[in-house]
Image (cartoon, rainbow, N blue to C red; front, side):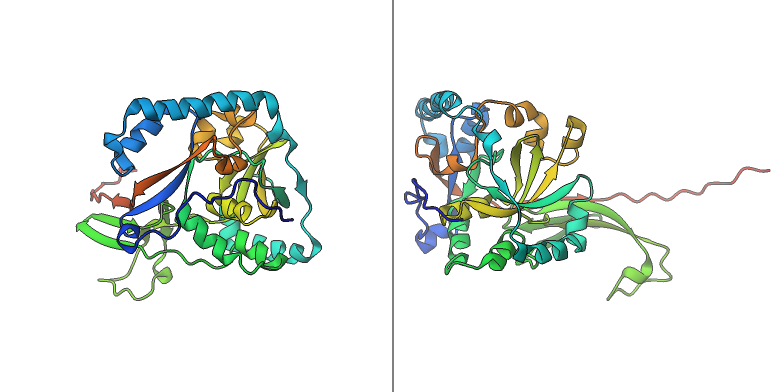
Length: 325
């Protein structure tokens, strides 16, 4: 399922000079989608020399893309409802079944009905407006030579992880700072653990219990959220764009189905939760192929950013007298 893109990512530099690679990377942005104020603020804060760019020029470019989207509402009205979803090839069914039994999959997809399918990439609705060009190039390189179907499945739904290291600093007796190059770093959950779940820890005395504040990465699966005939990309933006840039038209995806807004609020990204009608009901929402349309996208030189998570906690002791019978 491969087809050459009509608009390759040829205008994106993937071989920046070493001194620039350390501090600057290029991001592919979709223009023309609200809110404009967020785009202007991002350029000012993150783009190289962004504070010196004339707001009028930025707004003119954004407006031109927005006008083009209005044209697409006529010429491509309902295109997101025409997305093709094929059954997984038989050779991939055992892999999908194996993945579904892993704890990482079960923890990530324990809320909504979930299936697998070969999904048409171009017509997937997107809520994330930017991707990093260099990372896409790295992912494309992993697709050469062309993997077989099993290799393609493992590219989209990796069983193993190769995440960047997390740096941890102690800021005080009850404050810690976690830092990563990956924007996927996040606070995962609070966990109550028993003493026998700990390794390489010498306690002062017998352990009554342990409260763990867990910081790490997301599930990293290529996953979509489906409502009626539309599918919104939930996770795996860089892989999806890299696949399309490499000529693939369909990819094995995990599909969660929601049937009402309350379900969406526990499964989707915040942008989709805030405006579900835009993504699931508008005539022509932003879709994956827009990342390849020169009338919509722009490339911005952005200062490299690290993701930090600060975790703090509070301990209080109380003596509580029991009431008399």
